Image (cartoon, rainbow, N blue to C red):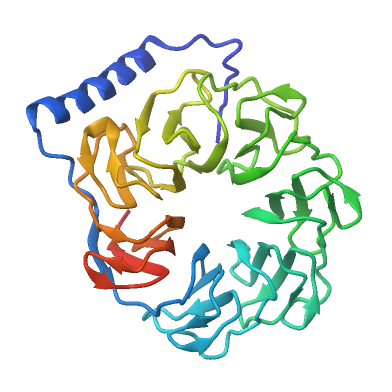
Length: 380
């Protein structure tokens, strides 16, 4: 995120209010007049991939590999203990098979695409003892000299330049006291001791601004970066101190996302709301979208926001959407309706240059059997 101005010194702009009003009127118009939703950029017909026998909690595109992690033990009938990789054609990679002895809940790749960072609730992966956090090479082998054991669960990982951020329930990481959110060196795993936001409770998801200066977090906390925050906050990447951005609407946070330019921040809460904020402009939401259940995964492109969870409708627009939907970044419903079938729905959404990857708890896409992972082609 560049050229940030503090909301404490910059009053909410009149144009922001007009944009918020326009979004509301747009939503009302869709409901009342029956105007067709905006056209989505991505196909709602999925491309066949390998399937899992359990939930997929994390998806990451690392080079040509689609890495998935979760609660599964087989992929297309082949043994894969909680972590696997798919090739560009969607088939199971036959050699990538580190195996973890507990659920994998978070994945991300290094900027150069040579390392895969894995988080979760395991104590062993690839034959090495690792407490909830590990680094692999693209062949699936554990990088032996990268160690950063935690004493809890890692729910989220985000790589930004030379740093890898980890978030979850832990209070210690690599023998350093760090509560629930920490930064480490991508190459050495050294803890960045200056970064110490100290959230008061579990962090469920994180995102980093494109310029690497801000870290966004959502979870069950009421305080982060030495400031009171209602389940979501923005902290400085060098120290972890809270910025002036203090979202007026919030709750227990579940998932976060940023637009590619970092100007718009999205987060969801356990009261079924998905909020959109412009942190450099105002503490008030630009808009909110309410669903019939929690939103557990969000991903944003420059034009669209893809979100999934255990909902069967989008209350704001009075339309049915089974577990997965999208809106424009300005808050208008799109016609994208893949219609998943399952219980909890998506847990992770990853945007790539040519599509949308969705991992979660589902068994069908548009009536066709497709378990755990689905791919939709197009430019998000």
